Image (cartoon, rainbow, N blue to C red):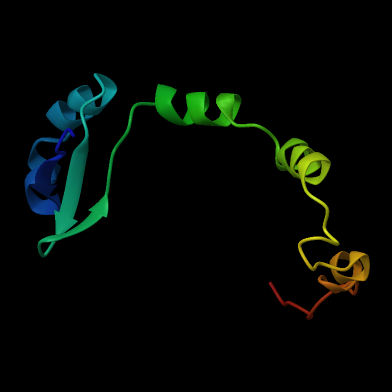
Length: 94
């Protein structure tokens, strides 16, 4: 298990270029505020890789349905149709 390096946000402000270089190289760096973890800078490649490698929900759900019967699981077909409101929702002023 690799432990992340920890830096306070105060220290990170003065060493941002170094932290960015380390994140780009794949190092895990945890930024803390008052000793509590608040952020982790990551290389630009990582979220791209996560988005590209992750299957779409509908594909995973269909595979689940091919393996498991909702009836056996105790889920009735009408549940999915009533689980979400079809109206426009509340009015929002922007």
